[in-house]
Length: 108
Image (cartoon, rainbow, N blue to C red; front, side, top):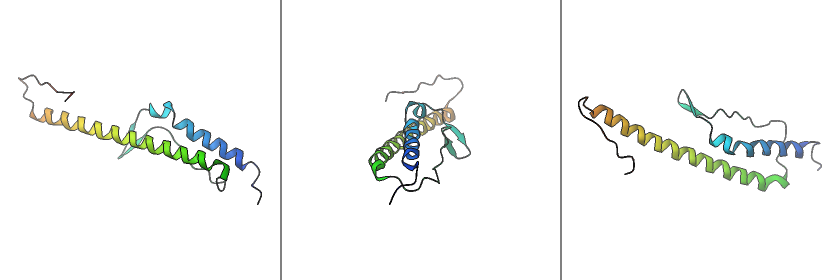
């Protein structure tokens, strides 16, 4: 069965775009809070007109998925760390007396 004209090349462009989004630009993007959701400012929509991914590009797509999963893990780790820091700051702010200095152990 012949592939539709342009599909392979269009899939290449889509994969290129997704790979670029995993680069340093996305990792360094400033996170914003929109309601209860975090946003990186990267807006991507899956193409609807391309049809099935060509077999020749499956391995590249698998590697891309692995990279996306790693980025998700990094973001979740950063979120947990920020949450722990916020909890520590809130604890200090509620326990602090105005007439005493407060020191935070940031290494231990």
